[in-house]
Image 1 (cartoon, one colour):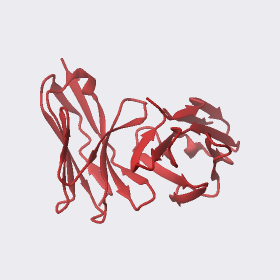
Image 2 (image 1 turned 135 degrees about the vertical axis):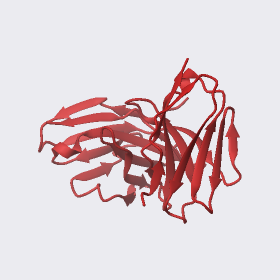
Image 3 (image 1 turned 180 degrees about the horizontal axis):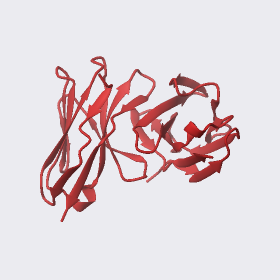
Image 4 (image 1 turned 120 degrees about the horizontal axis):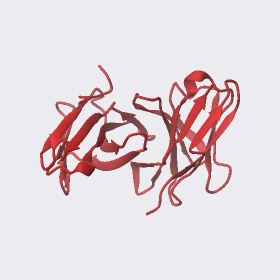
Length: 114
Length: 110
């Protein structure tokens, strides 16, 4: 069964550093998303991406965040200058044109900012 | 009122029991609804979409009441492997922004 993959599984970084989280969505999917989940809290939407541009973003997704699809398979989330409060699990998800709203999630990257 | 509200539980039930989870949502214009399950420190996994007419998938039945803005999930003959947190999810807008509830924790005991 095709699945979303994410690397790395765990990233530790110092406050102020840049991080790039990587995702490979399901191959025939066209819609891509990033969510985050702070420990013990609910899953929160960050951004959706379609046709090489952001289609929607939340208030959390400020100027420190950016997304990119650098090639035909990868989808990345960059945090320019990490803060302590960016520590969370970051999930990538994708959905296909046959069922736009059924999103399939990757295993997540645990980001720890020290 | 929170966008998606669920009873946090935990629900502790014996194997074979029937258990029901409820969820309410605040935006009456919402059109798409889902149940996901999440195991501890894992990703949310899509369990089922929720349709207006109600739908069933094996031991799982989902119902939607638009007038009351209420969604339910029924699990029959619960198994040990059903132990997880069940997330009620509502689509916001048309660009795939999913709004998650905090989840209801289920623990099925032998």
